Length: 418
Ligand SMILES: *[C@@H]1O[C@H](CO)[C@@H](O)[C@H](O)[C@H]1NC(C)=O
Ligand SMILES: *[C@@H]1O[C@H](CO)[C@@H](O)[C@H](O)[C@H]1NC(C)=O
Ligand SMILES: *[C@@H]1O[C@H](CO)[C@@H](O)[C@H](O)[C@H]1NC(C)=O
Image 1 (cartoon, rainbow, N blue to C red):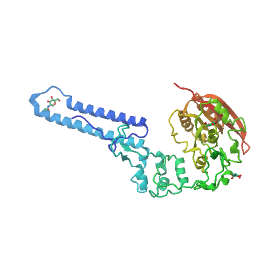
Image 2 (cartoon, protein in one colour; image 1 turned 180 degrees about the vertical axis):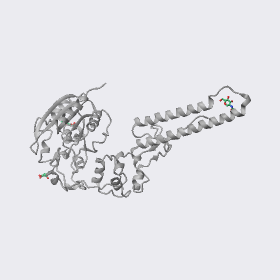
Image 3 (cartoon, rainbow, N blue to C red; image 1 turned 30 degrees about the horizontal axis):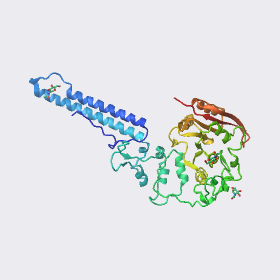
Image 4 (spheres, rainbow, N blue to C red; image 1 turned 120 degrees about the vertical axis):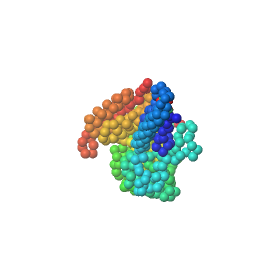
């Protein structure tokens, strides 16, 4: 008597998403349990002295009082439950995808539906069901998403990587496609490592689906982005000299930067690393570098892998899938270039800081500051993190259009914070 059990949503606990928010839910739950129990306690115990002579009258009174209180409690529970359900929906972003919508492909429904663990609650983690991990923004581009998820389970995946990438760039990351076979491409002519680092590859080992160019020669004739002009030419091009021969004071050499790390540089992360040359040069120094890349206009990810290097297919809007304090080095060139709001750069800087170990190096490589304001914002942000400036070079260059551009290159050391 007087005890109230609360049922949340479909009656199962959930442990995904931000724990911060789920503790808010927990607090709310706790609060409503306590209040409803107090109500009940009050209803059943608070009363004046017994009065025997008007027993029946008072009995009736008591009952109506109790039933009044009980209905109050029930209303309270109902309201809290509605509130909780709404909060839960807000938390689990993808519940904004209305699974009852007939235009949603079955495979997407199957993927998003929660699946109870077959053996019940897992005693170690407390988890009762498996919840699919999918970008909350996927629901925003439901038409693209529906198109992307129309495939035959167990069949070949459609060759539509440009569509997948478009979704990723709209924040739909990770993607929900799981149960089809990606087209397999025979990788003929791969060389053993480390000979693989600087050899030409045949065009036929890459997928050109959704890419304007259909061969490497075409890619090499283009400036794909600020970090990749002819960057697939590993034999004759400029790529060969990168990081080992400087063109100017803003180009630091790998050897010099490694010396600043005083021998403690073993693993690194390269953001927006073009065709993987930074990782290749680092590999020659026995430093393992993971290169973050998407296949925007070129098969970057496959090319890096063909060199025997580790690509990670990821947009920089995504929290880095690495644990804290792991890396000795983070290198970022223009991959860091986020137009728009300052917070975006801040989110990125905090994440870089998180994965770097204390004493680790952050190498900002020829970051283009399109305006003085942008340089100031970046400088302020960097200073806020309290890094030691081991190198700091602001340089100017005349760009193709004849205008001068300001570049910032820096090597910063993460402090030990207590
Ligand atoms: C009615 O409630 C009072 C306390 O509020 C209690 O003393 C009394 O015994 C109750 N009467 C009956 C018939 O339950
Ligand atoms: C490698 O590719 C470049 C251009 O991309 C070409 O000039 C060169 O002849 C090729 N070398 C070999 C060994 O195929
Ligand atoms: C890399 O490691 C190999 C094998 O341990 C060693 O022979 C080589 O000298 C190292 N290279 C550098 C640049 O440290």
